[in-house]
Length: 214
Image 1 (tube, rainbow, N blue to C red):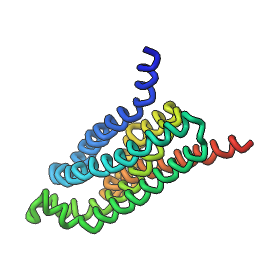
Image 2: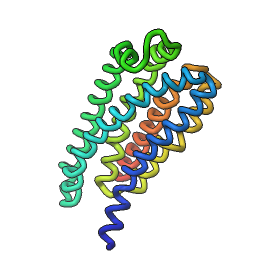
Image 3: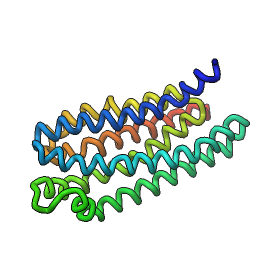
């Protein structure tokens, strides 16, 4: 039974990650409806169709590396643990850059798949999707970093960072950024949320490594 609860604790950040997608979609729908009406919701729906692709890419990198990191950590092989973590994060960085680039360059094609060029939502999507594409880079890196924390039994930190990106940062960003940057701020809410989370995780890891050296 103790092992079961331990597995639940270690896997809880993944559950929060799934819930974060739901929270982001719901909050985003309310904000887009308020500022842009039905056309805005239609435009945001295209971003919501793309978001799970980035999430699945991040998950694939994370879930592929976690068994290697966990095994190395469990056997006390710290060099292999660190190496596997670096490979995971570098893969996420490359995947994030690739995902952002593809969505940025493929905005016209993606938009035409879902929305007719005659619709008012078409121009909104064309303007906003390139901004939204920036979130892919930080999203995939965040999932890899949080997965690394899970793999070395730092579930509390992993839960905290998942809460930051899925709930604590995203709601204020959706509320504040539209008031500061208008429509641009709405599209940047998710990229800024993910970027802030990346900064927090990086800051924690830098401080943690310094404390280990002392």
